[in-house]
Length: 267
Image 1 (cartoon, rainbow, N blue to C red):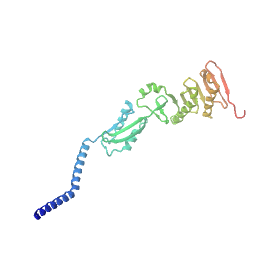
Image 2 (cartoon, rainbow, N blue to C red):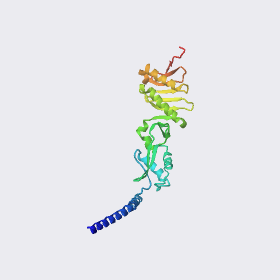
Image 3 (cartoon, rainbow, N blue to C red):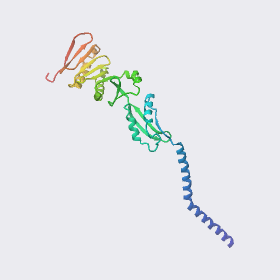
């Protein structure tokens, strides 16, 4: 019996020794396995590493997509996925005036992805350009196709100096709000070098107003038309607001004009 006990004790001690040795080796074994798996993954990723710059077509028409693709294709760091200077690429995209906003991101599956949205025009500005709600004047990518579009042809036409574009656009929106109760919308709006405003509404009515109390005169006109002359608006050819205390109405069916005098504070 003592011999058996000694043998069992020897086996147990040997197992403890091997177990302790294995436990000590475990970090090294796991480290080797981890590094091996990591090396395999990195190798596979390097084999599949995306290259080039990709333009996301969503939100762009064909002409806009091709124009943007031409811009990024000339970028020198085409294959620099990790070192690509994204802000520099973003500046190149935003240099296109027709681009309203853009986003550049790295996508392991696709490469450097360029996303952009075109400006939405609210009016035409002159014969060859458009203007958005922010007052930015821009040329569409495909001018011929754009200006043949019925949607664009239906937009109001604004004219004036380019540096006055935002002011003209804001004035159009304000006039539309004042005259909306009358069912009138601006068709043409011109700001002359002398700061005279020429308005043509969608029913053909023309309005002229100078730069003295311009907005007050236009707002007064809309209120008077609503209150007193609503049923005769379609008979009017033009309204001249270039008077201090009133305005002149030219009728379509007469060669004479009627002068409407506004009450003053002294009356």
